[in-house]
Image (cartoon, rainbow, N blue to C red; front, side):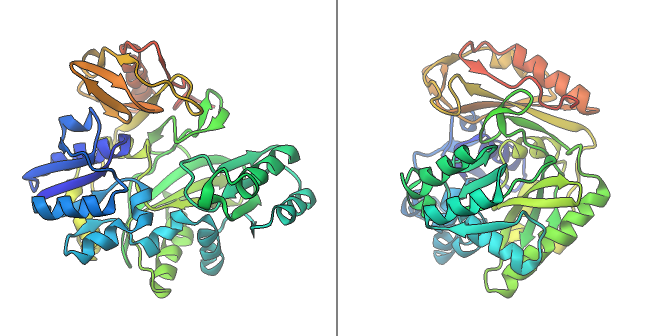
Length: 420
């Protein structure tokens, strides 16, 4: 098979690395890719959101199957465009991708499907939103409705911060069309966990669990980011709780979307808060998480590609995935200044020494080549991922690898996977 992976981050590097190991693959491409992805696939200079360009490339190169990593092309309808040309693709249609493309739609679906989530209200008028916040009190969460490059969510510990988040979206139009409407909701408390399931429209197959550390600084300080690392399995999801998540969150969402004419195919990612009342949904995403994909792919024993094809073809019941019992842990190395103004252009050295351990894999998220030099070219730049017989061993191995990387302009959290 000739396979295309769409995207350029650590998630896509992990997916391409797993897919490249499949005996079904004759040729593997990535659009647009990065320096690390170039070691797994042939990178092509087509942006992930260039729908026409991607369809044209697939036609010219006779691509048999497309795996779409990021959310933006899914929301824009890349799957619809590919399937209309007879090119099979893994991921939801634009209608189903609204689960991530519109937080208001997702919250309304939770109401219809009786999925446990925070109490919320939708607003387009800033005065009405502020009046609700004043009556409700803080802490409270303000979210831009649409995709806002990971910057549309504010967890406000005081009213002034909440009002500022309302103004940023509805008055200053800081998020453009994505912020024309906002969702204001209760602030849930507890430990976060990430739950993933492959879905074929009607059937859902749970994957291994994971956790993502969202804030930029140790002890969960500083602004929210795209994710600074995490372990798999999640220390907060027991097998019994996994069953609860499937029964109360994943399956109701899948059934409701099918019943309403938006059948979901792809990977359904439930961001969870483990509250005293049980698992509650923070948000749905319609793609693999980043950095969760890195730890999941490290633990996956089975061939990934047939499972993705089965999800697209509606035959997931025939799939049985196997996982390493070892734990995995990913530490994200980011460029100085991230998440606000990351510095680009610094050189990274020492990756060969860092990855000499066969249980370590370094996934690239924001890198490029300048001759023989590896250059940082993003905010989150590397995902240093390791396996270990338990969480402590995986953590020690990952941080030992981080210590071998020569990149003074980079930084990472030092408490990923540490006891709290």
